[in-house]
Image (cartoon, rainbow, N blue to C red; front, top):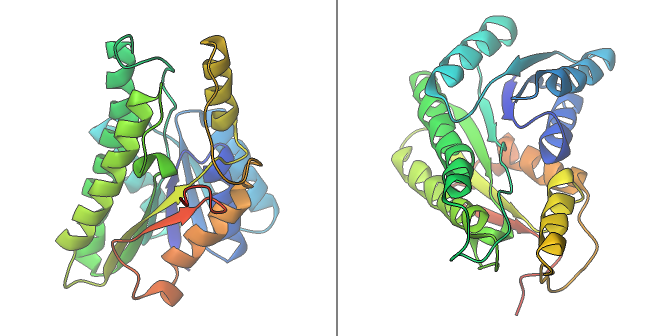
Amino acid sequence: MKTAFITGAAGGIGRAIALRLAGDGVAVAAVDIDAAAAEETAREITEAGGRALAIRADVSQSQDWSVALDAAEAELGPVNMLVNNAGIEGAFAPIDSYPEEMFDRVLAINVRGVFLGLHHGLMRMRAREAGAVVNIASTSAIRGRAGLAGYVAAKHAVLGLTRTAALDMAGTKIRVNAVLPGPVETRMIHAIDALAGEAGRMVQRAGRNQPIPPESVADTVAFLLSDQAAHVNGAGWVIDAGSTLP
C-alpha cells in the first residue's frame, strides 16, 4: 500500500485529494494546522474502510515537518506520495498599501511551506529512490491579479520550486509536478471574492465563470501521483476550463 502525505487536508482541494487517493487504496496522512478538521477528513476515510491518520502541523515550521513525517511513517508506512497543498489567500489590497506583515505570512505558508515539504519529503524519497510529489499552485502562477500581491508572488514561486525540484531529482525515479487550478469551489475562492468586495473591487476572471469542483483537481493530482504519469515531470498542469486562454 502506498502512503500519501497531504497538507491542507482539512478542507477544499486538500480534502478532496485525500478522499480521492483513499478511494484508490492509498493510506493518507491528513495534515493541517486545524487538528479537528483534519480529524474529520481522516475519520471519513477510516469509516469508509481506508487507512488514515490526522496530524496537526504548521507547514512553515521545519520541526513540524520532521515530527509529522515521522508520525505518518510510523503509523502508515513510508511516504511515497507528497501533496503540498496548504496555503492562505492573504490580503486584498493594491501593492502600495498591501500589509507587509501579511505579505510575509503568505510567503511563509505558501512558499516556505512548499520548500520545506520538498526539502524534507524528497530527502526521504531519495533515500528510497522512488516517489512522486504534486504541488498545488494556481493560474495565478502564470498571470498577475490586481490586489493579490502576496498570493500571486507565492504561486509564481511554487511553480519555480516545482521545476527546480524536478531538475534536482533528475536521474532518480522521483517526479515533481504542479497543478495550476483556476477558481475552485472552496472556502478560499469565496474569501478572495469577499475581500475584493470589501475593497470595492471585483476579481477579474476570463472564460468560464463557474468555479471548478475540487474533485476535478483531485482527479488530476491522483493521475500525476500514479505510475500512469511516469514520464510527466517538472510540469505545471492548468485546470481552469480554458479561462487563461487568450
